[in-house]
Length: 304
Image 1 (cartoon, rainbow, N blue to C red):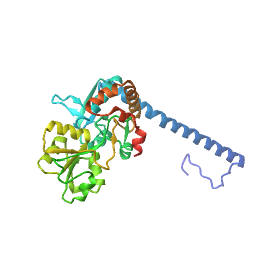
Image 2: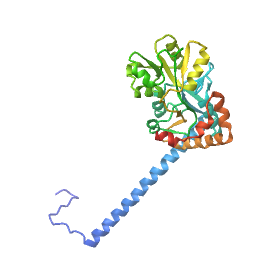
Image 3: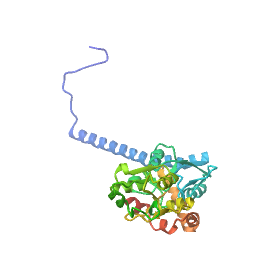
């Protein structure tokens, strides 16, 4: 027999029914306390972490935002200054929150949410339209910019396109769209084969591809297409707008899941801007309707 270890073959005496019942109650009570403790951690820890995000941005003095360089939604000047309706709204709001500057990073739409989740950006302010699948991936603010869809084609619209379905029916037709953007998905959903939906990196490239006959149509929101055409001043181009069967979309500033407190603080200031009239003064010179953004909500848009 090893020292300190005592074994016995005698049967162990079981406790009385009352003792066993008491033990069960004690175990249940302890389990309940433990459950309450876990619940308290779940409820309190994320809130503290979320509040830390705004303090972090205040301390560093700037917020990193993903943009697409797609006027009038977003734009980057030659000196690197970020403008456009979405960043201009975000800049004012973050200044009111104590964050004086925004730093823009150009990104394809399809890369914006992964970049946000990977913490390469603190927010997306780029005309990233709200859709149920995106709402499941990020924490959107209330609506900021609303627009319909358009297509850029050669003068006279030689193939008679009015919808994405028209392009799907024409086996020789091709359409260009931003990678990962709403227009790409709308074309694919309408039945345009993948090999006839051409991913285009930016608006100028899309316009040039239409001019050169490399694609039959290029699709962007109405205001973006109109901005391209105005700057190109090319009488051989025509805009089809709005695209038949395509919904009107609204964007919002997008934040990482877990940063809801930062999103909520953004929403408080956004509401104040809308109520004061300052919101309209910021976005309407770009061609957007303040009334359109104020007529709907995140809840409605995320419901699809």
